[in-house]
Image (spheres, rainbow, N blue to C red):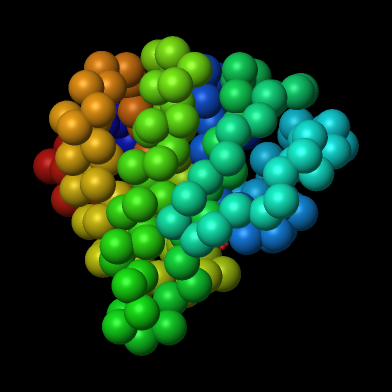
Length: 165
Ligand code: ADP
């Protein structure tokens, strides 16, 4: 897994993952940036979906983004860690890789799902991200390129430590 720093919409890949909410109606943070860069058709295309459960994801076209698809992954809102947050966060990553594989994507960019407004403790969320991405790639035999895009220095340095990069 590679680590990139910056705004996810400034990178090119087959699939760009955004951290969406269950309503799939656009949100703040990374989702706002993705909708802004993709254009209004992205929101339009999400109206075909009747929302998305936490821990699941849906796939759409990418419109004006430099990508083929956007995967809208719904991570958990962190409460106290006793509400299946870890399982749901891992599931959001795994479902995204499954969907990416289903369209034969060769490269995926992930943001650090749930670590912004959703309040997941950063170190724990990154460790779950790394483990679940590795596990899902092995289980699903996904051989493409995966990068985590870190928007801030703290996320970047913690992830670099975690991956010894
Ligand atoms: P969530 O609601 O799942 O917590 P957020 O969008 O609030 O989602 O935050 C998830 C992560 O995405 C945070 O680490 C945040 O700093 C980061 N982020 C915000 N904007 C961008 C962006 N344009 N590109 C990549 N990551 C971003």
